[in-house]
Image (tube, rainbow, N blue to C red; front, side):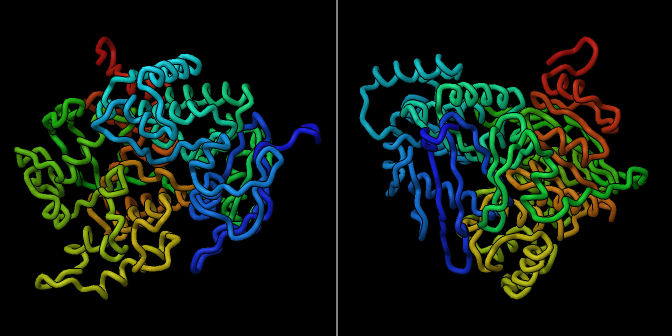
Amino acid sequence: MGSDIPSRLELSGITKQFPGVLANDNVSFAVRPGEIHALLGENGAGKSTLVKMIYGIMQPDAGEIRWNGQPVVIANPKAARRLGIGMVFQHFSLFEAMTVLENIALGMDAKIPPRELEARIREVMATYGLALDPYRTVATLSVGERQRIEIVRALLLNPQLLIMDEPTSVLTPQEVEQLFTVLRQLAAEGCSILYISHKLHEIKALCDTATILRGGKLVDICDPKAETSRSMAEKMIGTGLKDIVKDGARSFGAPKLVVNGLSTSKIGHFDVPIDHVSFTVHAGEILGIAGVAGNGQNALLDALSGEVHGHERDVIKIDGLDIGTMSTTERRRHGLCAVPEERNGHAAVGDFTLSDNSVLTARDRLGMVMMGLINSGAAKTYTGQVIANFAVKALGPASTAGSLSGGNLQKYIMGREILQKPSVLVVSQPTWGVDAGAAAAIHQALIDLATAGSAIVVISQDLDELRSLTDTLAVINMGRLSEARPVKDFSVEEIGLLMGGVHGGTEAA
């Protein structure tokens, strides 16, 4: 870069302090015009705080932000957008009952006549190959399509800098490729992109530069293409990345979870129910269920956990006991714990303390409620164990779930269920949004739980995770489950075909 061309964005000595936490400590780096720049770090490393200051959601305590060479104070997100800074958040802020067009209109700072806005939306979509029907209701859209709304909304502002926060955490491989095509096109046109992700192989494929934070401090600025995923992960965590210890020769015990012909009813117009699903998981076995999002994974987890009641008692058995018509509470008493995909509001209540969230799922198994009274001491002690064992960055059991970063909340939720030592554990997206070090720790905890005799079902869209973690694998497509086979017998190509709906020989879904 020539010295006469200023950086698009330059941070100098940015510092931000919260009570008890130095979130950013003298951070300095620059993003060039047309550069795709990764921002990496463990959960709680300070990435989100930094991005919130760039987008005007909060202000730095010290340091300077320069925009196209000029010092600026970004007072609020509207000021950021006026400068030319757009942001696509990890959790979408969309109204499900409204159309695509209505949602985009709500997010615009200036009032634009509907016909003119629709024309501009169609122009942006045509330019970047973002297929969307402006009159579709958001509730009918896939996660990938919802993300496109946020991207189109940001691109309507003609941004000079686009911030992407964990943009691929819930996308299919095909949607990831489409997104990368859009981002590369934007960069080629001169738009700078600040890209936050824990998926280091994506960083290597997409990004020109990576800034790595650890504990609020800048530890390295590197070329990701010259690094390995492991070397970047080790810079993020500051130590060597632990290899997962898995005894490939271990034998399985008796059947613990037996599912035979389990079906669910269609709830909403766009719900994908499960259709005569059967599988068996033995003591010590980890069964993986792969699939593209929206193929019945949530219906399966709800049916197994008891959130959706079955009509036939004998379609689900735990340790030989028929539980198909039991409630969630009864199933937990008999040894089944579950972690749903959505952590905010489903797996945890944001306004509750971590201790109170522990009571919600562990009260019966760990004796936290006696004679209708909560034993707050037991809940606090157990929550402290979860925080310590799973390295959850929180101020203690009295912290609210909503005060934790997404990755730290995921570590807490996984730890809360694993430490109950369930007979059967069913988890969906166990490492969604967590960094490499935390993902390895969660994987190891799941393997240790299986080694101790539990049966585990892992529902995930991450094929790398499933292939490294599980013993047997099945693929879900449109509510139907393929036959489970040893994971080593599958090729990536075969898994991909099954995810696309080819269930053997002549049959296609």
